[in-house]
Each structure stands twice: as structure tokens, then as C-alpha cells.
Image (tube, rainbow, N blue to C red):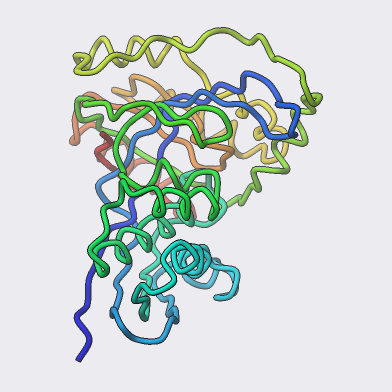
Length: 291
């Protein structure tokens, strides 16, 4: 009987997302402070079995075909880096919404790489693992260690892990999938151009909570205006979150359509979540702790 290993694939939340320009290679250059939730999808691996993937869970139907799933892509890239490594049978329980700006597929792929590394006695800091992450997708490297940090470049440049105080949040997705490339196209930044929207606020290790929230307020998500044009319901979500009692900051994550608000405590966030859910029962709403 195969030994089964399990990993959590948390939501990735872009607390800030500054688009500083578009590189000569066509990729957009970013500066983003990323944090991770404590809940999300769950991925297990029966090591030594033939490579396969089974997907179920609340959002499984929206996750697309198995062959295009990033879990299998990550496994194949891992196999190229380590030709003699054991692979296995994956089982993904999908809870996070798809095409939602919270890195669900990328986090699943990173979980697959962590599982394969564990099964083969390889450190996730090994260059082969990180190379497989880069080859799988732009957000996979930052999801690999699932630690708060700055993400720069097109996602391939990572700052050191940051010890952030726990941030109590409410994440809301109105069910309007947005593709990152579509939002970037709407922004219409020319190749080689700089945006000059403004510098990223300084984020230092071990920042007290109030200082961190004050710094985050000086930041922004530069993809938000374009996303709101493509999915006008986002404006409603942001307005509702901003007006929620106790909300300290409301912003879109990634390229949308998930938005988040930060609150002073779990009780206040939960109360806001219940009120929003009563008014909008079709929306996906979760309280979370980010760090």
C-alpha cells in the first residue's frame, strides 16, 4: 500500500500589487507584498503510483481539464529536473474559486512540488525544485514556501520571508472569473514603458500590526481599475467591504475578482461576512488569517 502524503494549498493574497512597467520581453514588472491564508485546497500524494490526478471538492467543476491542471504540469517539470524521482497519484480537494486572483492553481502546483520533494528526500530550496516552480507558472515560486514576502519582476524575484503579524481578513469572490492576461490587456501598457504610479511602501520584518496596516494603506493594486471595468461587480464588492463596520482596508487581490478586507479581530470579520452573505448568498465569502 502506498504511503500517502498531504499538503495544504492556501490562498495567496496580494496585499499590494504595483505594476511598475512592462519589460522588453513583454512581461509586466511587479512589486507585490504577498501573504497566505491558513485554509485553502488540500492535495495528497500516493507516492510511487503512476502519475495521475483526481479532483473533487466544491469548486472542482470549474477547475478545467485534468491535462491542463498545474498539478500535473508541476509534476512533469519536477520529473524533468529529477529524471529518476518517484512521482505518484495526486488527489486534489478543490475549495478555492478558480481564476480568482488568489493563486489557487499556482498554490496547488506548489503543493505538488512540496509533496514530490518530500517523497524523494529533496529540499524545496534545491534549485531543481525552484526551477520546476518557475517553469510551471509565474506565481508558483512565491507559493512554494507559502511565506509572506515581496514578489518582484514577473514573479521570479523573491524577497526574504517576512514575519508579519497575523492579519484578520475577509475574502469575497462574486463569481466573476477574470483572466490575468485580459486585465493586463485592458491596462494597455506598452512594451518597454514604465508606469510611474508611485513607489511601493517600505515593508520591514517584524512590523507591528498598526504600522503594517498604515504602510499597506499607502500601497495599492494597480490592476484594480481595469478589473473593475471588465467586471463591474467588483466595484460593488469593494464598496461593501470598505463600508463594513471595523474594516481597516479593502482591496482587490491579484488580477481579481477576489477582494479582501482587513479587520481588527475575527469576531468583527465574521460579523461582516455573515451580513454580506445574507445580502449576497451567491458570493464566495471566507474569513481568514493571513501571514
